[in-house]
Structures are given as C-alpha cells and as structure tokens.
Amino acid sequence: MKKLLIPMILVFALIFSACTVEQPSEVAKAKTITYQSENGPIEVPAEPERVVVINGAVSGAVMAMGVNIVGVDSWSKDNPQYAKYIENAEVITDESLEQIIELEPDLIIAASTDKNLDKFKSIAPTVSYTYGKVDYLTQILEIGKLLNKEDKAKAWIEDFKARAQKAGEEVKAKIGEDATISVIESFEKELYVFGDSWGRGTEIIYQEMKLAMPEKVKEMALKDGYYSLSLEVLPEFAGDYIVISKNFDAENAFQQTETYKNIPAVKNGKVIEVSAKEFYFNDPITLDYQLEVLTEALLSK
Image (cartoon, rainbow, N blue to C red; front, top):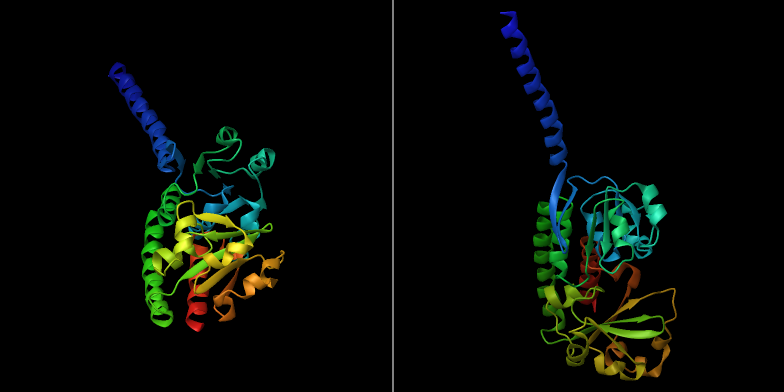
C-alpha cells in the first residue's frame, strides 16, 4: 500500500505544480493585448500605467482616454487645453533616451519619423504612427484600440460627429449655404493656408460642418493639407470668413498691411482669431474646444 501511495503523491504534486505554473502565465497573458500597429502586431500593456508620448499629434487622444502620461513633447506641454492632463509629465524628445529610461514607461507612443525608435523598443513596447496615414477619426479610434479603450473612443466619435454636424447646419442657416471660409496661420514669418485635414479646426469646418472652401484653397492646399503663400496673393485665398490660427506672442505683421486690411472679410468684420497653441491638433480634447469656439464665433458674426 505504501508503495502505491508514494507514486500517487508524486502525481498529485506534479499536477499541482503544473497548475501553479500555468496560473501566473495566464495572468501575465491577460495583462497584455496584441495591437495591430502600422508595422505589424505588438504586445502592449492591457492597462498601461506609465505612458511616454513623443508624438504630439496623438498626445491629446491619449489624454482623452484617461491614461497616465509621464513624458510628453513640448508642443503638447505648451497647450493650455492639455494642462490638467499632463501637469506632472516631463517634457521629452526623441533624443531623451536617458530621461525616458528614468521615467520607467510601460508604453511609448512615437511618430514614425522619430529618431531612436529601435532604442525605444528596448525600453518599453513602442508604437509609432505616421501623421495622415489614416483620417483623424480613425486615428482616434486607433489610440482607443492601443490603450484597450476602443468602446470609449467609438462612443466619443459618434457623439462628436452628431454635435459637429448639427452645429454645421445651424452655422449654414446663419451665414448661408454658399459662404466660403478659409483658415490661415502665420508661422515663423511664413503665411500658410490649410486644407481639410491639418488641424486648426479644418476637420470641423470642412469635413463635419461641410462649409465651403474657396476655390484657390481647393486648388493649392487640399491635396497636401497646407500651402505656403506670400502676402501679395493672400486675398486670392481669403473666403467670406477667415479663421486665423494665431500665435499671440509672435510677430503678426501681415495684419498691419494694407493688403490684409483690404480683404473683404477683414473689412466686414468676419475674421475669427483663435489661439494656435490650442488649435494645432485634431484629438478629442482639441476638437471639443474647437467646436465650441468656432460654433459660437460663426453664429455671432
């Protein structure tokens, strides 16, 4: 009997040992998800706790999903609309390897053009995005998938589209179906006009509100998203309404010229000045802010 008992005890011990090994492995597996990135599948934390975001174009979407950001780019840090989300985050760049290591991230989100992508991968799972590879709402959805919050992203997108399209109907009823609107910005002494997918409220104005774009803007800026132009030709790109994405602490001398002052929209008081730092991007936080500002401004003109 004793001879039979000893093998039985060994069998039970082996079974118990196998179970205890399998259980932690299943728990570990449950703590990650497989995200289908631009560069193929990658294992990422199911609930990331310390995220470094070097890609300013998607940082706002990460904030909107409610995860903890410990490192962020300078453009995001300068945006007043982001302040409460990244109050304790450090400013980093794609060259801040030692600083990023010290932050102990469990996920790094970068741009496909960033330096040191391979080195980031040795620090933490790293996912990179190419700006403009997908449309702006799909990009938000992708961030939701990455952070295991796809349902939250989908709900926001559905609600946003409904609100923006309703606002568009109200605005067109006020300013007219055929009224045109252009979006311009002065950056480092250069003037730019924007198409329908380069932030600055363009996605809301053209894609959701479906307001009309001046023909010259369609011709020169629609394909690439933006177009650099000289002051002399600015009147050719000006719509019945103009949104100026403005750095209020920078030089905006073009607004003091006779060329600018003689544009009909300027003469008629149909210029809307907005803060460039708060209007650059097209994430949920920025889009909600843009929608509120643009709707109120256009309905009051």
